[in-house]
Image 1 (cartoon, rainbow, N blue to C red):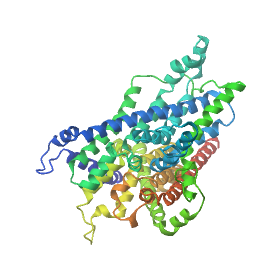
Image 2 (cartoon, rainbow, N blue to C red):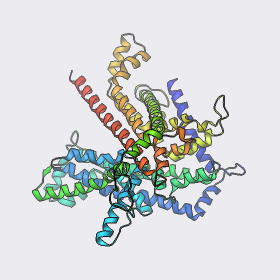
Image 3 (cartoon, rainbow, N blue to C red):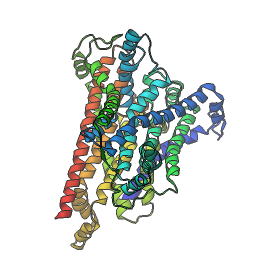
Image 4 (cartoon, rainbow, N blue to C red):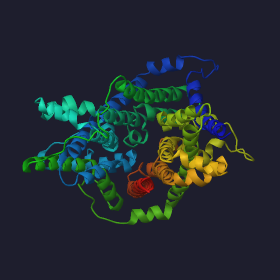
Length: 553
């Protein structure tokens, strides 16, 4: 019964909206007959062909530059012994805390045509560099924001390498870059491909960054602009949405294909990790210089955003002319609704996610119900559905449906935003719940049932309490990431009174006068996500300690 209800819910909020988008993409707008003319019209238009190429180019180049940023940090911290390696790894993950569209504005302040770096270059050397011009700006922002995906996954892979393979290569005379190119990096490929596919997927689907940088000749912005300007009956917006979904699936499929048929298994438990060696004095200096340069670059958006939030005037100067807290006062006096809406929406979305995540995890791992694996697959499939596609699907599916006792379209109800946020973040909560359930021994449930407890009572009194750490971690992760979601919410906000924080930041950033308050909202968003991330890590660590304590006792 529970599995059927979950399946029905996922059918209504995920499968049907996406299916509707795909169906309309193949539908003649005049006759309703199925046709491929919409796709022909798309590829016949120069703007859409250009947008298609640009999206692929930006995604691919973002992977390249994200790799150049992440690889030294991952290799140095796993290969060499030096103080601060754990701190470096922690600082390297911080860029994920800032929403990419907020980072776009911050990066312009430091690296834009009239940003701090170019003003200093022009003043002292007489030239400027096009860091943020057109597609370059999108690539730079996305690389800085998403490189932690590669850093986290590649570091984990390098730490699991069987060191006997490295020892064998060293004994045969391989060293330096040859050792890295022929042994270390190929063995770390699983983690690298996992991170790189996530970077490609996230960049390809991102809407806010191109919009804020006024780069509209990409697929996600074109889908949003077509639906918001032409209307929800415009078939091209749906064609673009289908292409976005296909390329999201494509990026995951390529990473799977690259791993297929290859053996990365180690002969030791845990692999042992790379052989860590000590650095000479000059090697240590060089290593720190590279790491500090990378960290200064990737953390620059956070500093720029903070300076903008407290700066009175910042125009054509390397730093603000003065400092004030007026922007924060304006936010708390006039834009507090964005914050309270976000806390409500993200909180409800997180609650929905952990309820669904716990139920799906139990159905898949503790029962033999037919279709259980399909529930897991469908729920995880949400990660391949871009936010703009989900938003368009909800508009198309629910706009003609009226709310009970009202003639207001259901698509304009703020509850739809909550559902969209929950669907988008369900995979994160599900994986946390699955991990928590796998740490609960089946024998504990069997013991409770042998003493007369019903299945429902066993779940309520035994399973859920033992999963509480993982459930709470899943809630915090869903809450923190949903708090800064823009792609889906920008399509579904019908009134500013119902708008969440991310939408408020986007509105403020549209004008020069609003960028100070927008930056203040951005800092608040960073604090919310940062606290959520910190809380999630603490909860997971405590769960591991409790689990270890239970094992010892």
